[in-house]
Length: 257
View 1 (tube, rainbow, N blue to C red):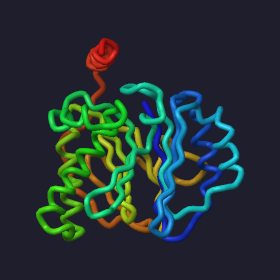
View 2 (cartoon, rainbow, N blue to C red):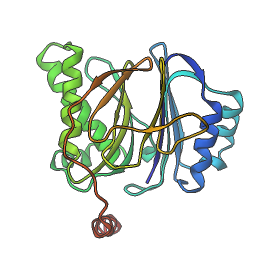
View 3 (cartoon, rainbow, N blue to C red):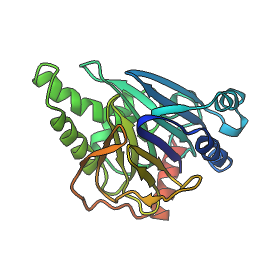
View 4 (cartoon, rainbow, N blue to C red):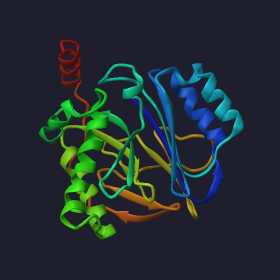
């Protein structure tokens, strides 16, 4: 599977050492890397469909350093979709109000009728991109009904419903951002950790560096703004349990396409 890293902080913090350690895991996750940095309303996404440790560009970026208040990083181990730029995380989509959503995923969607319509609408081939398209469509439905504006809490409830809808039977470890809030969800035990201190929250598939890392709460949506948790969703029952036969059949299905 893939690995995720993310930051939400009140002030800019230097995460370069943690990113270097994170990207060193690309020996095991060699099918692409990506970074999204959010800075005063601006989004910058950089990604390549190659092993992070082989990227001269990424090496130079890490040498320059990363001092950030909000960012996401991803290394891919491909399960669904070829190793191509269009399948490299993170994925970006704008809603009808102009708000930009950026998503990365560690997991696999095995069953979901609500995502099937996006097979012919997406640019790439991944289930992760389909999750983002579905999420933005759900947001757009409300925006169009309410003239491109609705209460932020309603936005949170929609996102919460999306993860509840998609979690049963699927591995749905997600980190995504709407340019203002960072959303985090996991439903597979032992697959995402958090390191928190006043005004700073770091997330990683595996604990990095020093400090105290704790497992992200299971089966509930968490939302952060400037390093503080501002929303905690109700727990759901959609825990993912790995099924080797289910994974084998999925791979065979895609191999025959």
